[in-house]
Image 1 (cartoon, helix red, strand yellow):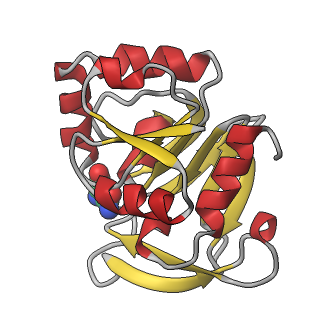
Image 2 (tube, rainbow, N blue to C red; image 1 turned 180 degrees about the vertical axis):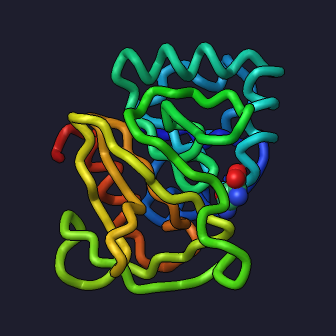
Length: 192
Ligand code: GLN
């Protein structure tokens, strides 16, 4: 199994480190040729506008969109989640746009720009998952066919799955808890 991590901008090194700890073969993706023979792709957090521009500039946008449409498993975290969304209200950023969710950017206001909270994520088991939110988006709406994986205590949706696409508003690569990455790898191998 080989998992690519989009390495245009943002927190890609942390995802690569987590995959190494899970002993998964991984490659940073900066050019279209890095997309060949991948079993899955991670789009990290960072600045969604910059990542989108870099993807367009390096011809990665259409390639990744087509791979997603052809069933490549993709995990998008934070800015990566925004880029998976079909809709980003009040934003000119071009998303990959393959997941039936609406992602509201910088949704948590100033004081709560960044926070950490225990999340209940039923697909990961009973133990709470440490949710690290950094100028995080939220999922405002989900279309049919999208499974909600996690909500905050006030019911805000913060993680979802659509077939082999997984989106999280938080940063699972910044905790020692590797269950979210394992969950994605189980989707890649077809065990979930
Ligand atoms: N605020 C960023 C954006 O809108 C996302 C933040 C993150 O990825 N940590 O793109």
